[in-house]
Image (cartoon, rainbow over all chains, first blue to last red; front, side, top):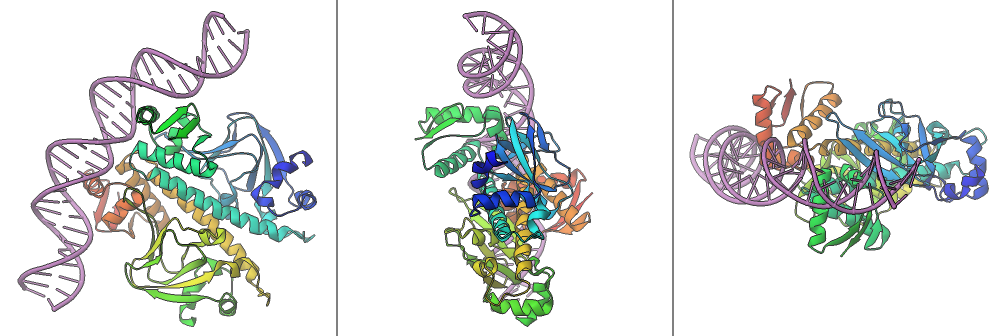
Length: 219
Length: 219
DNA sequence: TCCGTTTTGTTGAAATTTCAACATACTCTG
DNA sequence: CAGAGTATGTTGAAATTTCAACAAAACGGA
């Protein structure tokens, strides 16, 4: 596990916990890790939520497929990020989303009960862990609200521009790479792929953005 | 405050806390309460988030107005429910939403820091409070995902039916009242009001639902 | 480098939404 | 109970999205 210490250090769950304490706590938390190949389903819709997942390497996508077969992408998570924490906290018996590996990824699982209930040893930093998990849940709430802000726009153009503006803000730069290809971006914006491509072309002609594959620049 | 004890008892923040302990803690938490008339803005978009709000009486709506002037309704909260908890936990300097009183409503405010950091007296149930807040944040995350599931549908009909199905599930009944009028429902579903009215008429003709004002019955 | 596969772009027709304008129904208050 | 104001329903035209089908470009492995 020690080889992933630099990843765990930037994981929001271990914010303000010293390296030594992270190592100690990993024992108490009875973590398990697993490696998943590209496109592998890490957690599937409908299964019970018991574990919080941490992306140790690679990246994953949170997706859902509706009644009509439309895939919806809820988000994309990279090294150090958490998933399934809300469902695990609530002990949901049926997850409303699936988690898919974007690429070969190593994932750490923590039983949520080991975080919520202090262990017998009384780890000094357990309290910090609970505090960190709370901040993370608050952040996720805000992230979902941003996604709602994006897809509540009425046209593909407005959805795209709202999303790209968020990306630019997050990167403090007008140019950036997005973690989606066209189909995935369409699934995130909840629009038709071909319509999205057409709209990107228009925006390019209008001189509003430059774009090459997943690289974008707002002008 | 004692007159609102029965409301606070069903507030998720005080789950599993005895009446006496609720009373004791209210002192430590340095709560403030205020009354707002119908349509009054309780918290406005752009202002800093410091307090968690609890609806003691009446009801409130979480709304946002975008760049183009479209109002979006994020949710509707009744007696005992919390708002602004995620923003307060994160100490956001600029709230992304406004909170408006639906009707004359009494609101209790709690400084989030008084919940996150245990007071000197070491209230026995402070830990429970933190635990409860965490569960609430997890629940809110799930609620927003449901809203995303609703508005990610491509047509007004599908959005409406997805929403109504959630309502039916929540009430364990095919007939129920929704907390919105037509315009508000349109703002929640992120669609045009007149289009929504037309779609409701169609569904009625198709024998899929009955509806009178904010009362709906799925057939 | 070549070839098969995947991704992205383009197009036009059909379906749907938005918008504006107006008709009707309901509610509240004096 | 009358009248004003608000909420809901209806309609048609314009704008937009979706869908299907195909073209072009990029990618990856042999």
